[in-house]
Amino acid sequence: MNWFKKAPAAPRIADKKEIDRRYGRYRWEQAASMTFGYAIFYVCRLSFSATKKSLIDGGWYSAQEIGWVGSAMLFAYAFGKITHGFLADRANIRRYMGFGLFVSALMNFIVGWYVPAFVLVGVWFVNGFAQACGATCSIVGISRWYRKRERGTFYGIFSMSNNFGEALAYILTSIVMVYAGMWFDANAQVVDGHLGNGAAWRSGFWGAAFIGLVGVAVLSKFFRDSPESEGLPPVPEWAGEPPDSVEKAAAGDVRKGQMLALRNWAIWMVAIGGGLFAMTRYAIIDWGMFFLQVKKGYASTTAATVISVNSIVGGFSSAACGYISDRFFNGKRDGFVFIAGLMNITALSIFMFGPAGCLWLDVFAMVLFGIAVGILLTFLGGLMAVDLAPRIATGAALGIAGMGSYIGAGLSSVFSGYLIKKLPEAVKTLDDGSKLLEDGSRLLKSGEWIGVNGESINRFFDSSVTLFGHTFAFDWIAAFWIGAAVLSMLCALSVWNARPKEEDR
Image (cartoon, rainbow, N blue to C red; front, side, top):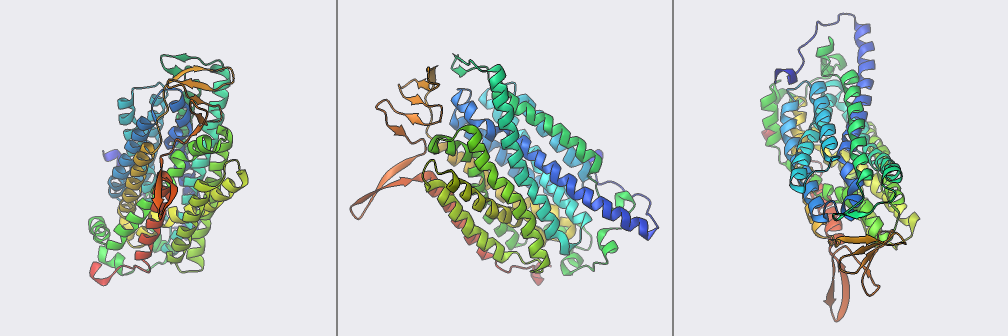
């Protein structure tokens, strides 16, 4: 385990010009490598989301099994976030982050060979735990290499990796799957309950594993542990940044700083709000593409493109909100979170209740959702918690916030998987490309499920509710996703203008 410990200080460089030159170069390399590296983490994480429909419709796994697999990864991620957060404050983050991405790539390679559902849950649990070191190492890197007054700016740049990683995962994996299906699975037949040999979805996982190894190489070359390990002075000394009261209370003691973070109620409230927000974010990440295919009839490539819009927009939103809050609002994040909460609720409502086939409206919803996600992911996902912690305990603060976020994401995966009706086993593929199911219903190529009597079956749970003599259709999954967005906004409002208190110091 000594290999993972924080790198020792190198002999100090004496030439001030050389120090400034290296700081300027290394800081931009640090920002670029952690942003690219963490985007690749997302490719290795979301390979399941992009392959989900092929796995379910091909009879490889059921929707409920997929839901439990996603939940296992997210709960492991939540546990890993707080574990890696407390360890990363003491670790060599270059080695730690690179090793985590290597393990994640290895798990994708294993899944591509096809394993039973109970083994798959374990493999994806390991992937989730390994994934959790990516963000914590990156945030510790920000605290070690950047001034406090520019933390929001570089945290925002780093947060772009979430969105670009999502876009890469959906677009690249979908392209690989389409071409693999064309070459190796063109005349797929139902054998032992499975449609074809799974060449498309297997290629999706193996492609993610290869991209993960590329990310490991980039991190090993350009991501650095600390300024001291490169012969440079610590960033507060180099920048002339005096310690504030929280830093003085921590007194350079990692354990003491971490205890200050643990006792701060506002950090825990940020974690709860982030968890509720994660329910809505992962609803779109995990099930948004599936929703567009089976509820609105989009082809897989069109659905992937629509969902990826929010990721691309969210990347720019993340970068902008961090810079704007640093440059013009002296690091205050509260107003941004309230506005983004309202946008999140509006976007989900349009997405869920908008008419089928209205492509421009779905794209608009994803643009609005992407702006909201960029802000909420940056602030509720960790920056507001990091702002309230000493520099030497930023990993712990992010771990607390991240644990809350991914417990919420795990619950979202379980409940969403339950709220989607199970598709009966396929019997055969008909001449028009639709699948005949065991109960006599059909699954069209568009993803629409047609019952025996010709009606379209809604795969998302709904029911009738009678109020004042009028009967209304009630969509449970819409209530779950939108309700979580409302509660998230209320939690964020509870820490309005929260700052570290004297008694906490």
